[in-house]
Amino acid sequence: MFRWLPHDGRRHAVSARLEVRDAGETLCGIELVVPSALKYPQWCWPTCRGCDLAWREHEGIQPYPRPGGRGTRGSGR
Image 1 (cartoon, one colour):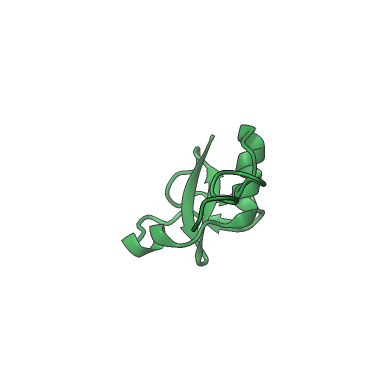
Image 2 (image 1 turned 90 degrees about the horizontal axis):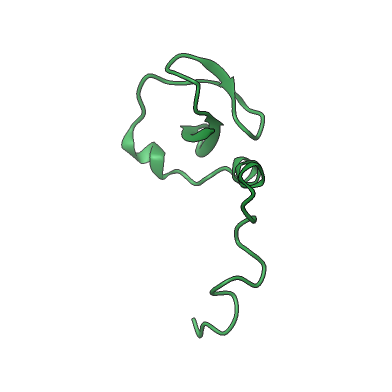
């Protein structure tokens, strides 16, 4: 199980077992230490593409955006 954690300008997926001050690694391979507090704007950072792909693969979810998915053709937008 994973959770999302802002780090180095992106939201990364990390093990849900990591607690404050634990050293760990993101799904994309970046080493980090879980901070004790985060500022609100950090939760609005873009999602790390590498973590997103690894998380989706682990959960059996297709990559995003999905080829031929909703909104890619005929939407008139």
